[in-house]
Image (cartoon, rainbow, N blue to C red; front, side, top):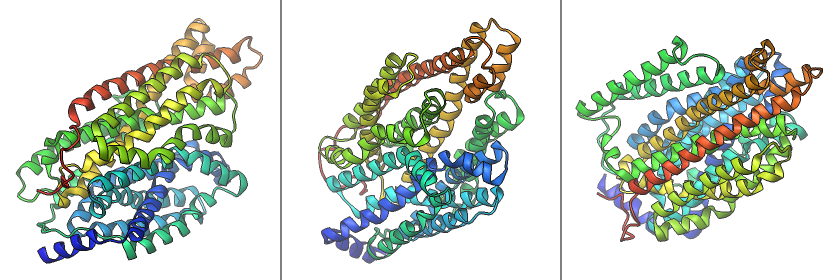
Length: 519
């Protein structure tokens, strides 16, 4: 085993420059596909619903099936990668994702499509969960920080640009093209990965903590299902069995999992990872950016499409002002991370996000044009460009090679749970502001209750239906804006608090370029 490690590290050191970039292309293409498919389907939902003649809830599970299976399976796949080969399970995940995309493209009905999206989600979990660890295996020191900068830019860009790519494909082709495009990309990425990706072999105990794997999977599953049930009906109380029951079960299982992992001789998860405060800081920052920015995209899209009146394609183009920054600046930010460390970059990025949300709160008013949002979008884009390279590099600092897959997987779980929790909590905050504005504007009348019950997502459709009621259109528009303003204030505070927390959690720049993952 030690001989294999020496051979691998020697190969790593002498790796040609061309091969180094081919490794990045393989990993990058896989990550881009996985992140695009988190958001790319959103703009196609109305078209799919019309073609399959299905309900809104069934259609919404086209999105939820991907995110749920993604979050549920990522820890198990990451651990299997650590035990039996990160490259092997990364490529297997790529194959599963590509096969799932093919099934989605030929789906004859919504049930088949939902199941196929679940298969895609399992593949996407392995791709993202192991990609960061493979970067850690294939690159060292400042080069690793630089490559992780590019990796982070792909994560941020892929999530942000999904609606634009989806809008173009739906408008000029059809919704099935969203999935067909993954097939050639996946095959190219697998071919390059088979030929060029290497990994560090290390002596490791391959005892499988089967109960730990089951408990971790069930824990995440219960929490995600509870949050998705709340997301599907924000008017439901948190105390209903289909929400509280799942969440309480998740918390109980989490406690059992921790107790089991502490006492079992060969744990599925090395809980010592959480003693490393830089790793904890990376998870906090990952959850914050997903909770604050990526979850907000849902409500910003509704604002710009329904209440400002822009087309899905136009909204995708406008959001390029946020999504283009990671693509353009990712490599440079990765270089800066290698030079000055994670803490300053991550905290600056979080603070820039906070400024962006504060500017949006100040400048939005009740305008019906997106131009007033440009300064806010610029700050959001700059923060989005800086955060992923810094936290992905921080997540791998001082982590032994045999734990890199799990560290990467845990970081990705925090991203996904942050997004799920963010969509639910932001929806509740926005709905509360919307409700207060409607009730005050219509003096708590029966009509006000009817509008509030329909919810902010149906606001503009209801306004057109009630067009004969005086001043109803501006009243509903202003109510949604009031909800958005309340939401922007909360998100701003969260980014400021996260900035302060990460400043104390993340360590300063290491004094040496010696790889920190070697124990």
